[in-house]
Length: 358
Image (tube, rainbow, N blue to C red):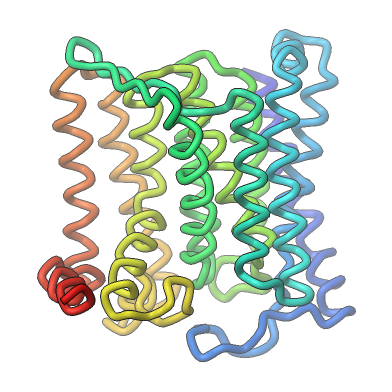
């Protein structure tokens, strides 16, 4: 337990030290967030904060790798899988960093994310089986590859899309990391726990400068790195446990960015708009139009995420049909929240799709 605590605190302190230095670096080289109509901030704000999160996590994982204790030994035993996950995350991070400095075409970013996801899959980090005790066992077989790749790339971009408000993506991802770390302890996955605590620590330190009013943004290098790492960690957790909770609880923790992206894509598809076209119809944009302030929207998102994951924790204690009922019920509640703020209307989506295909 001491190693876990020191991993989190070490990453937090490192992020607290690095973030101001990166703000100064961004100011010196004028690496500011590009002004766009859909942005809600004003003024020039540094946009490469993901660098602090990335360095903090990587340094702490490397430090644990060198420890002469049981946890360090476990990290070394899973060396190839750890390197594959971190290698893929680094590839995505570098692409995002380049995009923060000089815009990269969308198809190049998608190609890089897919290549990184394939790398992770190639080293055995795939969702092969999901078991629901006393009910069924879902074996993906050859479809484990496309399903895992789609999940990783989808979550990566979901985090990128939700990163449009001070502290929003960082806070939600910090909660998701804590959730996956708790699951990792439950399933005795020490390596996964170390990675998630190192990432959570970096995010916590970064939030001191990113919460409204933000002094720095994480940029694409941060949001894409976070999305890829958390998605891959979810796959690692599910692959080891093969239990519904190993996939369901992280999905609930990332419910806001995942459903926000899903509904946005459905609406754009139905309206015959490019799927990746930026707009102001996201979850946070709608809440701002209702009169909430930036920090209120972020805190509300944190509360919803905590409630969803808190209720989802009961999945670890339930079995068979009760776990499925609990999981579906929480998903329905999240969807209802989106419906209330006008982010999703089933009838509108169906009518739009009918117009598109008739």
